[in-house]
Length: 79
Image 1: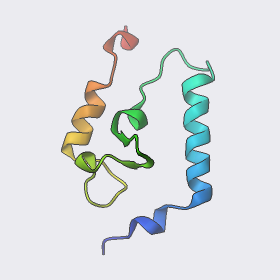
Image 2: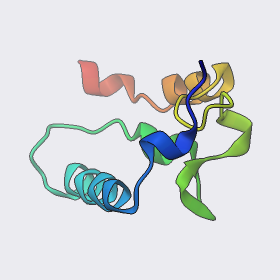
Image 3: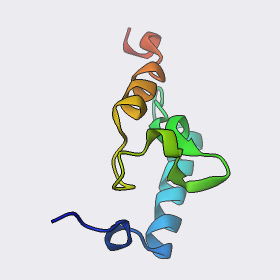
Image 4: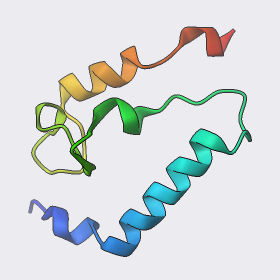
């Protein structure tokens, strides 16, 4: 049975997701950050994937999304 996106999404959860992502991006707690969220999000609707990267369940990226996520990795972070 395929679950609806609405089962996973809530306004409070979205606020928490955005807060945690902003802390990860700007908190200087890590040696480097690979920002998968920024790589596949729709800039006009930041709580969603770009439609091109959506697998259809609005929760997981499709193959194109995973490809863009892989391309977002700065390999120099792994040296």
